[in-house]
Length: 266
Image 1 (spheres, helix red, strand yellow):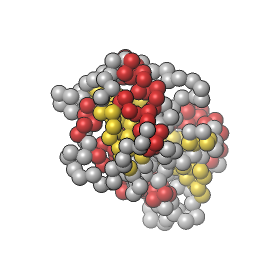
Image 2: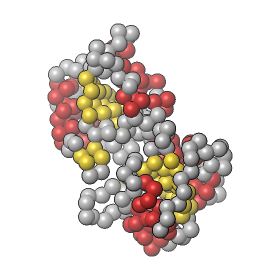
Image 3: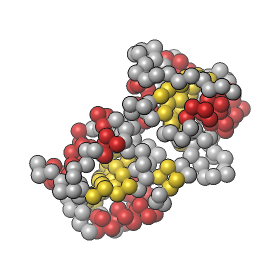
Image 4: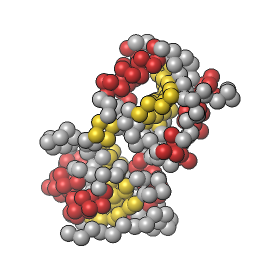
């Protein structure tokens, strides 16, 4: 059962909280997120939620994995929506743990809409998104005066066999930092399309796998080499790609915490 320390009252019976689990390191959870996890009767969690975060779920609280990974979907979104609705209508105290921040490529709108349609109360607790965690561990700023005046966040996940439907001209702004979520498989298209839209092949790129976790690895490369590097370095691990001149700061501000990987052989 949830801990009897007053946290149980944070979630009303039949209420659902979408909780940002951050990039994986449990120390990067908000204090509110940890309290909500301890207050739940049932926790639905994504595949990318870090094991250290799951360890915070009290004994006796039901855990339901609804994780979706590229090419390995255990639940479709409609099924997840129905599961959350059923738990709410049963009067349970529900936490829906989402990797990173619920508002960033996490399909929160579908779940909120489904819950509100049956009159269930639903609230959101934000979390640290992967791009912020990567910037912190690499010692760089996503924005940089005179170099990167804005930051663009995109997801490069697309349906199998279909290209990315993106505004490449807008994304190829040399005065911008581009944060690409789920971009490993789309690396060839990212490289080709951004260069075709005018972004130089020498543009700095930082690829990070398993951000914030003990096994995190980072590799600096350049846009024209991105397909080669992503194929040999990222493999099937959770990957975030930063593209832009601000990336040249990587590891200049603080020492690298993780071992830098070597460029794979062609």
